[in-house]
Image 1 (cartoon, one colour):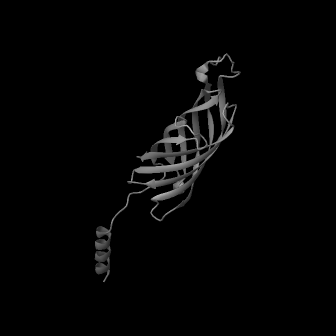
Image 2 (cartoon, rainbow, N blue to C red):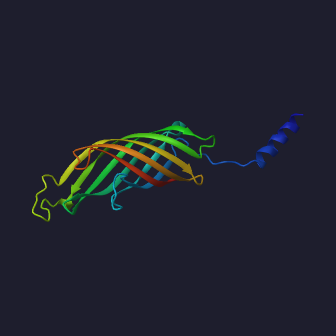
Length: 186
């Protein structure tokens, strides 16, 4: 009887599909994303992000991301470019997911630090006006809500929304971002 039970379990195990482990502790991933400022009517206002993540227990993960953003502000029929170079580091908490963890909802919190350059460092505008500040060290915090969907066992599609508070920035101190991205886990 025991042999029959073991044989049946072996046949069921071999015939059933096996799924790859997703979000296992110490698994690493490389992420790239493209975000926009939702309140901005211009297409040229964007944020490009690339970085590494490291999974912990229960689908939580640490992230370290490098960001480049470009935003334009209008001033008397002239657009003043504002560029930011930021490091975004923090922790993301697994909130919800389906049984196979193919679709997940995560909430991340993090710190931001970087450099902001206004009008490419030029103090003088085209009409003779002077900018008081052209370069700044900026820092702040952010919160991120993301939906992550596994396309393959190693490829993840991301949709996220962020709310940021930046100190010393020439942009609004509190602003939102909406983005999409892709992550490759290895």
